[in-house]
Image 1 (cartoon, rainbow, N blue to C red):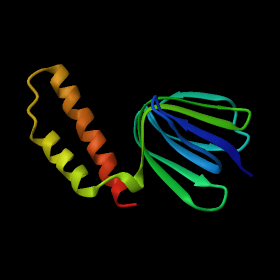
Image 2: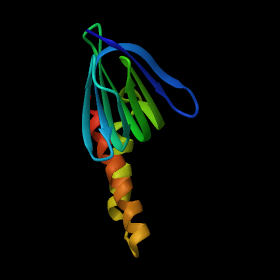
Image 3: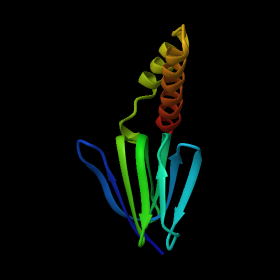
Length: 130
């Protein structure tokens, strides 16, 4: 069985497809979504969004921040950023990781910023391989 999934950013609607399954990077871990799931509202973290399309193909996005809602077999993902894996360059992701690694944290805020950049770069590197 399948359900509708819409991915929206402030700039555009990135996706509107019928899917069989979604795996969302929530703020506290991965959440799997299947047809007829109980209503859900979850805060999105940083990482890869995996969508198993109804036709058997898989589609991946890098997403960061926002919320996801599953209700009445419709998954709506409102996120700050949704980059298709096909548009992520492995070399650029490695450079982002190297830059974040080299950055020195001097206080709590800079430590959190550095960690956020490292998490983004790791997720992009993971997706660049797909």
